[in-house]
Length: 243
Image: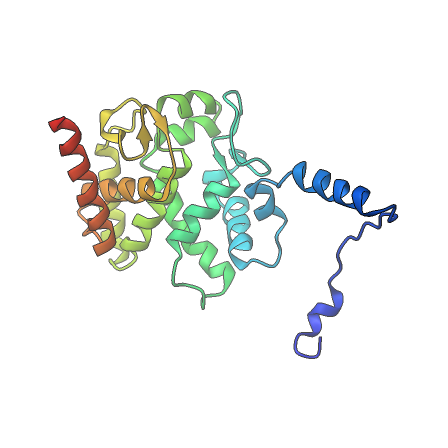
């Protein structure tokens, strides 16, 4: 506490059990750990006031009209009938990727950079606006299009990070290419990248392959690791076609 006085204000919940023997203690340990429910990442982001990135994500969602009333704050998965279009955890992951390397920037400024980017991106996805205006259902958009899914948001975040090296006029101009992409969920273009067997997946390599596709569409070079994963995917595709 001498090194970090703020620790004096910390508290944790403690539950005491009466020790009625080793066998009973072992059983309680097994029961508590077997049935423990881990909270969703979204609610973790919502309640975490120590993580600066979580605070940034909350500021983005609360301060941007793009996300008004369309973000699920507590769950990290969306039911088919959910009226929400995004999850807080997806916005968190995407915005962390977008603002990588900006740790020295104050949180409000970092959040503003992210809000500016997402608001520009949203201009090229009119379906997002239709959900906010209650002209289309969120479930319908998620079922028919892939651009509101977490994997694409994270890929867009990585693309935004790459675009920051460009001037503002240039990165906004480049984003217009998003309108030329067929975002239909059943588009074969996404198979092996954002989807496997028609199901949306979000493994690390899938995020990278989706990022690669978007970068190629926007005329951005791939990083060496991105190129390596792209080459491996292309070799795998050729091998499967050969068989």
